Length: 170
Image (cartoon, rainbow, N blue to C red; front, side, top):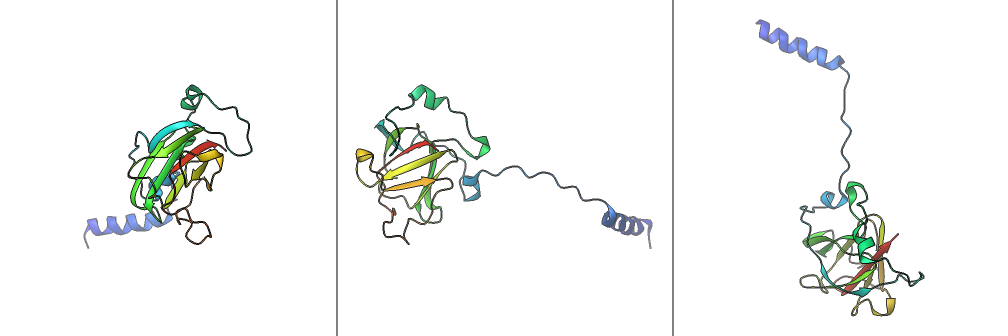
């Protein structure tokens, strides 16, 4: 046997007794874990006016204050919404950080096509089946990490029904 073989065997034996050092895992962005490619869209629709969440005061954050909100770690930003046209975070997906306390009227290709809806941590999003966040009467609400089922197992599914939404601080 050559000395090279002995070195390989000796290295393997010593490696068995060496302490294992594991690096701390970097936090994973939840959207990346479900297949997000990292693209941030400018918007998912058009802001059509201020929104007040049910059961809250009529005071709203100014756009300047909403724009100054810092991201919540690397997991996202309040107002950040990840949506997909199919259940299980599949099909065409998009992500944008929308202004807080503003009603967003979805644009094509998102209007009446969403089956997975996931807000980033720090916000509750209210979704509507008709118009521009009509009368503050939300049909559905979502908190992190959202719902990828289209609500199909419920008596009131949101699958392909959402026309507008608004997010407020949780």
